[in-house]
Length: 336
Image 1 (cartoon, helix red, strand yellow):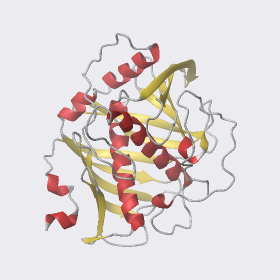
Image 2: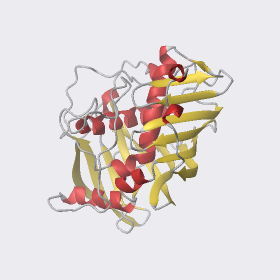
Image 3: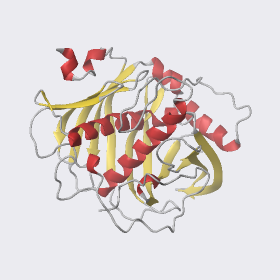
Image 4: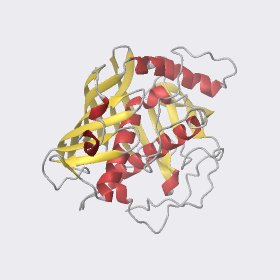
């Protein structure tokens, strides 16, 4: 299992491109928050992608904390608040060529303001590992506060797979919680897993709308051809002092649709310099385009898949403006 223990003394350099030849950490230890229960066949791809997305959430939101009282955070459960407001069609004055391409992407998916105007969402989320096993949940989010809730209807992979019963997770903007058959799971692993998945799953849903959040950097790369399409390529990084990690995202932007059809990303905070490749299919729901079908596998920096073992993430039955009450997301103890 790869080393997923971050180095607290590492000083990230947001302007430095990842080194594809850099060797991984030779002394691997598992990241405890990703494996709440013993699993004889852990899927390293889940650990890689989850760690990377958590780092992206932490990094993008850390700068937002400078301009608002609260911000989305990492597994330490800091304060939380609404995402940065963005107009539906952003002015491109003074934007770099790379950032202009990303602004077109954000506009193409509907813009962050449009997403927030839909208030909240409920959908079915299916995570399917390469061996066909699944975790399936009913997900509910509030966009303004980024509160998150899920009830799992199937748990075969990573969400407490060896305990039966109704499992619910929630995040109220300050703390996360888990119940199994109505009883709160207070052990550290369950708490960290809930905190991790509630924030990460929300960010996967809203990622394309949030790519103009403060603290991001943009660099234009050489065009690349995939499947007969010559893609604009933009590398996204982070400003100095932003977040706990300095991951890199390489977006392949379709010149016709302006959407990111695929992207590469790293997990630098855990010594993972080799990228994963994520391929995306969108669904239009009430005027916003969402990355409803995603699949990822190990790749190289040329975007070539290195292992034909794909993990699938599917969002279905997407319904907005459900009118969820705050009590849904509150820890069970606070409802008594």
